[in-house]
Length: 143
Image 1 (cartoon, rainbow, N blue to C red):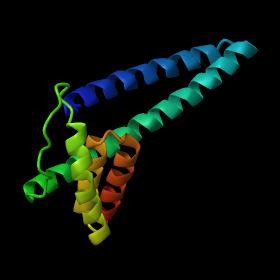
Image 2 (image 1 turned 180 degrees about the vertical axis):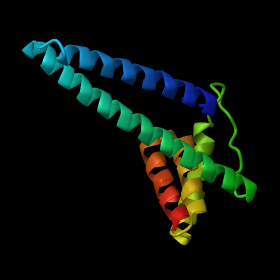
Image 3 (image 1 turned 90 degrees about the vertical axis):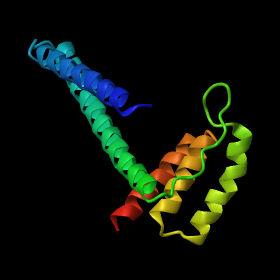
Image 4 (image 1 turned 180 degrees about the horizontal axis):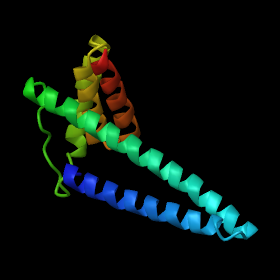
């Protein structure tokens, strides 16, 4: 996903959260018990949405910085062949994964290795592990 698209979606979500907060204030100001309850629920949900938005945007910015650093250092993995869908070919991703995993096992304190492992997980369509490895890369880059 492009950075511009992520920021546009973030702005739209922020607008929605703001509108939900406005509706919450109106509902709580109604004086009706049901309106007050719904208003409180909207405040809680808007707060959760704001937290999630900020968390994801910070994660994306930090990850983008690391990818740029890795690219500038010439440490990016070799691009994998693409399937007709535009995603990395599954067989090629499965073949490249053990190399990235071995790199992390050999250099567990290297944010570069963890970032390449994150990219390998992402190419293999394992987003949960890709995000976990990316978080580890971000943590190690701060040390």
